[in-house]
Length: 87
Image (cartoon, rainbow, N blue to C red; front, side, top):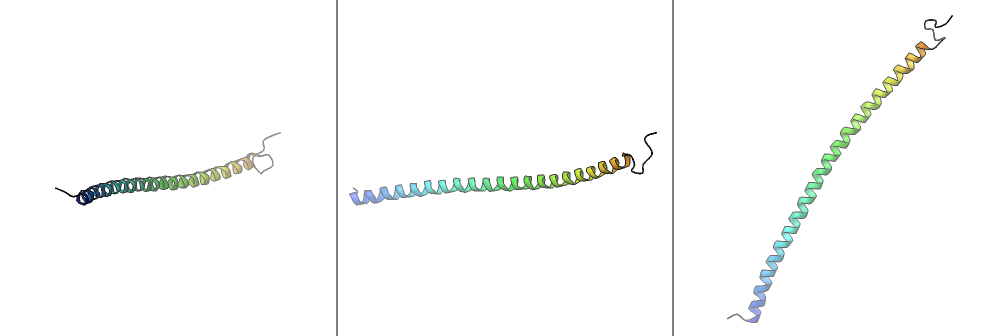
């Protein structure tokens, strides 16, 4: 039969390999989560960049529209050299 020392060594080997398998599984799960978060972060960074570019384009458009409104207001204001508007 087995001696007590042999049984303890056998149990330690089984428990150790089980612990190693559990540790490897835990490491794998954590690595997958980090990878998923990294990919999510990259996607979000791309979306933020696209929104920033869109915002800059909208600000430029609003600025040009504001310039047009000012020009039109000057043209239509009395005494601005436009057509006479009164008696």
